[in-house]
Image 1 (cartoon, rainbow, N blue to C red):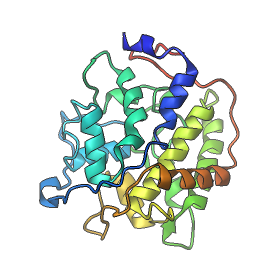
Image 2 (image 1 turned 60 degrees about the vertical axis):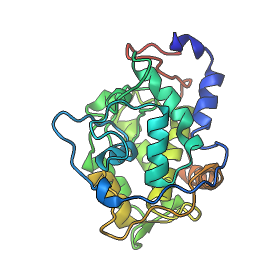
Image 3 (image 1 turned 120 degrees about the horizontal axis):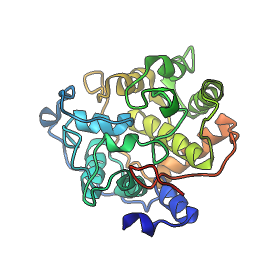
Image 4 (image 1 turned 135 degrees about the vertical axis):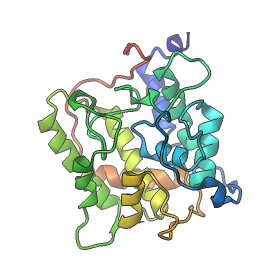
Length: 270
């Protein structure tokens, strides 16, 4: 079985690291007919998950709008066309996401809500699994990010690190059983670098507040507000410096425990 192929934490750590440290590829994405990728709210039978980046791609039709039938080629192609994100960046995360389902060929956006796989505590916009709804956007939680970097109309790596620090401090109080190991810290740092890169400048890590807030709150690309897909490819060379800056600004400390990755929908893990 697929689960038996991942028997060491080193293997899992390698897969997670590939989220940000893939081989660079300067191939340009195709010109997009944005009329064919208009934002649409999910229908009553459409699936969404805890990741605003993937949900946004589904809402614009880069991923299947029903949130089903996701696999390596589907996800990597969608991120490349919608965000100009190099395929190697997300390959490790997609491999791990397959462990959330028993389907050997695909997963859904809803599948990845399983706690301890790629979903994690101290999210920027979702509640912890132990505290309730870990799938849908939570305005109260998002307020920490929304109100950060006061007096400026942008977010940057310093504000992103400070938000991570505050979210963790608040969450350690709200959730005594929080999971906060190197694994979760790496994922959270990568996610912060992701929203700065996709909504702003992937070189400087500066993103307009308006764009970021629309992205999280509406899971929409703010095209009408002036956003455009980055001309600079988002890859390991751009993400790694931002991640390092965010990590330094977050002043992170572990809450204890060893990194764990859930290996299947039944909650088995190592």
